[in-house]
Length: 221
Image (cartoon, rainbow, N blue to C red; front, side, top):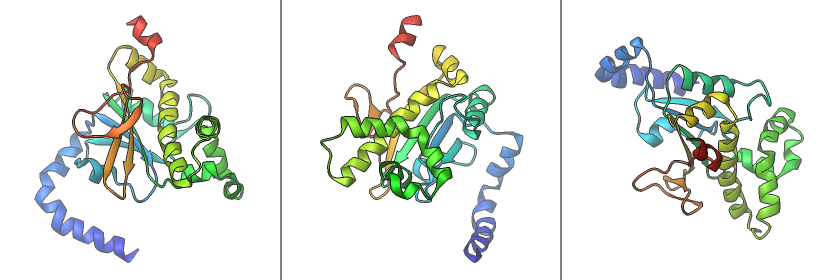
């Protein structure tokens, strides 16, 4: 705790002063353009990763960067997503998984999770991820590779879940929203974006890929 207190003093004396005008401008309200959904893991810092200032990201964090399907459970996730789109006018949603994710490791290894009933119930929202891995990745026997595949597939599963939210579906239908699937490898600093053309995650180097609308929606627009 002492480290946190010292950090507050350092923030006030060395950081806040030179940027006081920025913080004062935040009194008028926030105008983020991106909802950034990521894991609660302490090794992930969205603002540091994206080099964004206060007020530029609307951040939603939980274990495993999970988005329950709409009405599958009453959750803060649904409220946050609804507010981001309807009130803040968010234009992009990023779901960002990360390497060595403890939540995804727990999803694969069910036994330890039995002693954590709340965690087990939460990970049930990634049941489709587990089924995909168990049925489609039989060839992956290396634990590290299997965990990486789980992290990636889970991001894509959660993107499908977020499409079930009415505000998201409506915004997608009028082409006012883009969805992005990212995976952050914290030990190298690399960020990978799902490339629909290649059907795989590739390093972010230039343009950022948006996950396209389902064919059904494209045919309606």
